Amino acid sequence: MFSENTIKQLVNYKTPFYYYDLQLLHNTLDEVVKQSQKYNYHVHYAFKANTNKKIIELICNKGLGADCVSGNEVKHAIENGFVSQKIVFAGVGKNDDEINYALSQNIFCFNCESIHELQIINELAIKQNKVASIALRINPNVDAHTHQYITTGLEENKFGINPYEFDTVINLIKQLSNIQLIGLHFHIGSQITDLVPFKNLCLKVNQINHYFLNKGFDIAVINVGGGIGINYKEPDKESIIDFSAYFKVFNDFIELRPHQELHFELGRSIVAQCGSLISKVLYIKNGINTNFAILDAGMTELIRPALYQAFHKIENLTAKLHHLPLNKKYDVVGPICESSDCFGKAVELPETKRGDLIAIRSAGAYGEVMSSRYNLRDETKSYYSE
Image (cartoon, rainbow, N blue to C red):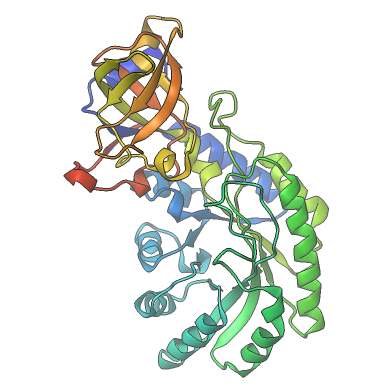
């Protein structure tokens, strides 16, 4: 990803900043479109992964829809060219203003996560003289075997409607005049690197899809969410994941009726590898047991390591220019006044010094979009290669 010419160019920018390889994003999107179109699948981009305008402009131009989890994400999607009929609005806690705005824009679907939410959307739709299309977010109780903070498909998670509530939900929907059930929605978690949980999801979807048909609901849309993981350890080896294998699992194991559409909500797998957080070394602090490389970027720019103990590959780009060997270990940390402000412990790097340019890889998803102004930090800028 980082040629010598690219590194020499990046040296000119004030750190820290996000750097995006738009050609890699373009190639990734082409592969998503190619592999999903084999089966006539519909792909919505998960806005929560990255809302950088250049990123979503390219995604929109490729014809993807938008998966939004807040009213402002819905607004951002519409303002940046996404058509309303390709926008789905998910989220466990939609407020009235957000629902009203989405209703006024005639979005494709609300993914509803509770009985109470169905009632509120119906009440607000009546006031606008609208009929809201909804999908039920189902909790399939499928273990994604991922980090506890990013698993979403188990009964103990806050997301979704549980199977023991189905009869109550069905009876309620029959009474609500201003909602129309068009879909069933599932999402079992994020950064899933084994395809087996998706096979297990398909088997659960088949059961639930059949259950609703027997209850008189011939569902038009099955939405299986996203969650396919990326290679954080070797980003250059697998800069684009195997979308062919991913979509094939659903083709092989999900049982759709002829008229049913299958929808996906992909985020990380589209944008993560195209982005890196670029920083400089402020200080080297050598100790008896631990050496520290203190950067000018911190958890305010990339919170994933502090929040999830997430791994990101860390590279010394300056040393890469001089082809220096990996020969020393550092705890790579930021300047924030928190002990959790650490990007990696015992990271093997070349001999590192003040002013060296550091790349924290695979940061295109849940990086810039989760940045903060804690410690009154400056806003992080972005730069791009076309």
